[in-house]
Length: 381
Image (cartoon, helix red, strand yellow):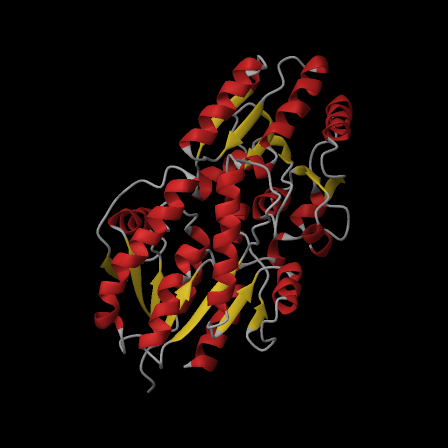
């Protein structure tokens, strides 16, 4: 009998990350006797236990609980934690078969890169789920730092043994950047199929349009307000609900903008939701508004579409590989006026629902992706 595969999960800055995708994959791997160890702070360990998705795992705890409350803090706190993690290399060396990073941002790339230097046998596999354009909206200094660190992460990623990409666009991007085709594996992305099928409409919620995601300029949060101002002229009590969170500075600025536009009575902040409650809320919404201007996949949009909710979004490149039968109403980037008029027409005619979207749900399961990744672990052992 072969010994179990020993996986070290790099969660150095995963304190506030969406954990369900990672933990659902791990649950699948554990069914094949993989031994799981996390590297991260006690905040992460607590959150993993609270989800109750997985039961048995080991944890290497990094000192420090500084809240990652802004992009700038995340950048420099990530570097600090990686420096602390270097003192753990001696104990980690030769004790794991694979080190796994759920994202390829610099703060989750540095430590695996260093491990590869000191441990020639360990294999590094990572998920590449996003690019960082220099031209995205937001604070220019922070955007430049994020872009610069992203360029460094691309250099470090060349040392990875396998890179799982979530979209064809990202696959093409890495190949253009000179990455070895044999290392880059297209897995796609997924939704929580069981929860979507189990979720039901909750009459306690009064939501006309729902947005799910980070409260961040790139996600089109101000375009949503532009849409709301237009729709409100026809439907004064129209309700936009926002499920998600952002850094303290961005949230404060956004709420101030809502107040200045006199939209407080039209916007609900639901906070960050997970599990069945999240999907109950999605199914309780009439439409889904997702005006992100840059996406590598757009998982929140897919979740809503799979819940049978009519989606309104800007026409981004990755969507053409996902929505091949008009499951989403797509508009030119920045054309919020057309979005608003289409929403008004939808409410005038009460044309809610998206049966075509519900047909997609079984195509995007985490078990399928976990299987692809697991088979590649074995190839690398």
